[in-house]
Length: 434
Image (cartoon, rainbow, N blue to C red; front, side, top):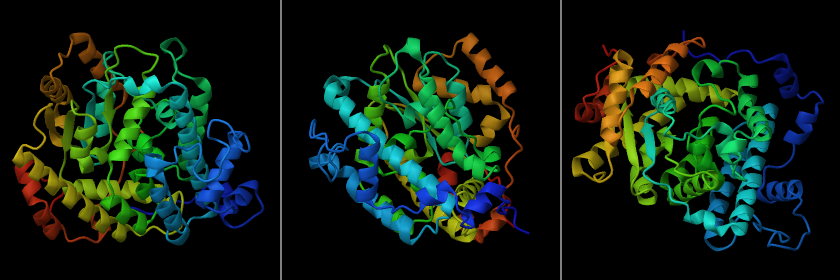
């Protein structure tokens, strides 16, 4: 019997999805087209007919459109087409998606206006940021959370990456209004499928992944995780990710505008796909790459993504997801071996850690990470990290059940495909292969 099974949805979700008359259904029925979404975002922001500051026109006016600012138009169009033709969204899924897309467009417009008013924000220096990378489910989240216990580092919270403008001064941190808005959005999926909290909890004040900044240019795995959109997946795999990293840098510049002596500690598994682009945009970035048995990664991440998609659609194909992730991470991890063998990431530090070593002795791994990035680990910071570990034991929210057998993949063949990667980084087997 498969380990992953779609859970029953709350009664209100079933009622809305069944077509009962609810305001949610009325909103969900609106078209997911670029013109319709831009018009609604413009109306919400009060930009209709102003005729000033470049906001009064149609098209992409006010959203960074024109010249290089059109970097979001093509991916948005590809995504919207895929959502309509491929994603098979439920009524609630369509409602959640519409709110998500409108927030991205509205905040993009806010950011464009802010930078126009304060162009000096682009001169903010993002100095030697630390990026925690690695495939999903390899310990990136807990490692990042432990680094966040170090007061010398600033780790962005969910509300900051969802709604970064205007920047908040340290004395006014956090902004309760934006925290509430972020909570409403981030808790939305968990209200549809409660299992999500046992796998990966989300809230406005929790630490947030860089991928949320990249979504403002619609080049982001936030979309491929939530939706079955194969045409967008293909487009994303072939696109230049530079605009996504440049927008991420801009978000960080905005966030630190009213702060001083900021040292960012950032995190997202998506960085593993784009390490050379990350380095091109952040030349002095220090990168921590986490490693785990790829077969365990495939089982765990597929279970997570299946749950995310179940919040938006009745159709979730676990075997299709398993094959997609197997191909994606085989390519990515093989490229990582190539980069490592060529020394292509030399320069700023790159530190490698293993999931099994972290489970055995997380504090020792933290010392290795700090040594690798050239930062001392004070005794009081280590104590704070130990306290965080004690307060957040693994599985405290119910644990995450997954099985490689659910994916319909041949474990022997997949083990062979990932053998080069495991040998290069001394990654032990976690999933037995008979």
